[in-house]
Length: 86
Image 1: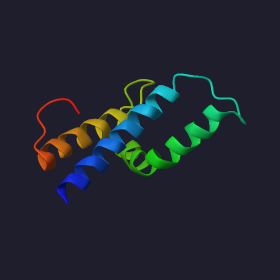
Image 2: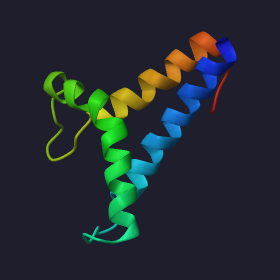
Image 3: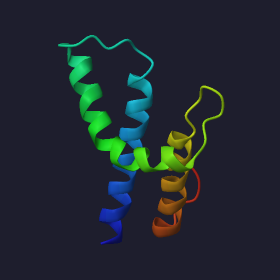
């Protein structure tokens, strides 16, 4: 059971990284990148939206992404006993 949780947390971390990478590129409607962006947004927004209400912005930067990313890394280390990295 622990292995499944560890793998799910790793997959979610990769989804978050994917969303960050896709956000660097202009997304035009109707393209494959738009579909990927939409899927990544739908998968990550349920956890990011509540954090945005709690975590203040640092100027124009949204820190909720970093808070969620590091929270999942710490949770994964606690549950899986992983030391460092992914």
